[in-house]
Amino acid sequence: MTTLELKVNGKTVCTEVEPRTHLADFLREKLLLTGTNLGCEQGVCGACTVMIDGVPTRSCIAFAVTCSGAEVRTIEHFDNDPVMQELRAAFTAEHALQCGYCTPGMLATARDIVTRLPEADDARIRHELSGNLCRCTGYVGLVRAIRRALDARHASANATPCPTMPEGEHRGH
Image 1 (cartoon, rainbow, N blue to C red):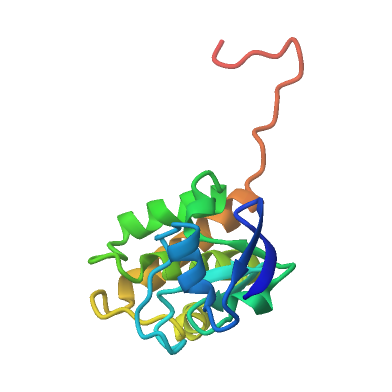
Image 2: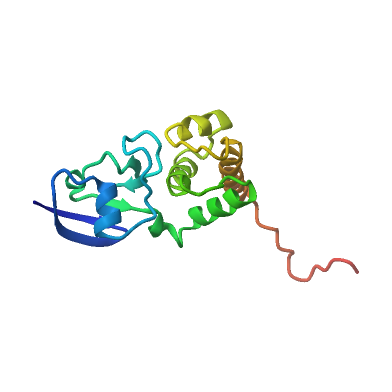
């Protein structure tokens, strides 16, 4: 057994783990954070993607002990995150999810794209999503959802406030 200390979803965790325990198994079995899904268990499908120190990472191939001292964020930690709320709404509007199995990993990756690559075009979005597999949607809705979130953030950043009228001036008279 090895002592593991890390921060998971804002809380410090200190516990003993077997050195061979993968982070995904630790999160699901020890911390009961079941939003992290296991698919291929080879780092190919992306269903297990979590954020480790702000970087999307496949938790099925990361040993928990190698994350000692790191900050891990799972899908459960993004409930009140404004970017994730925008993405969830966009995923719904663009029909970017079906069975939902890949969704936690897709959302983690999508959030990274939106926050790290605000000028990404559709080709770049597709490239960034290439490590996340979905057998249901065909990616068209996923790309449109991320594009929607990027466009909304871009429009919001470029919006100019309405000018105020000088005191004493009135319209419509």
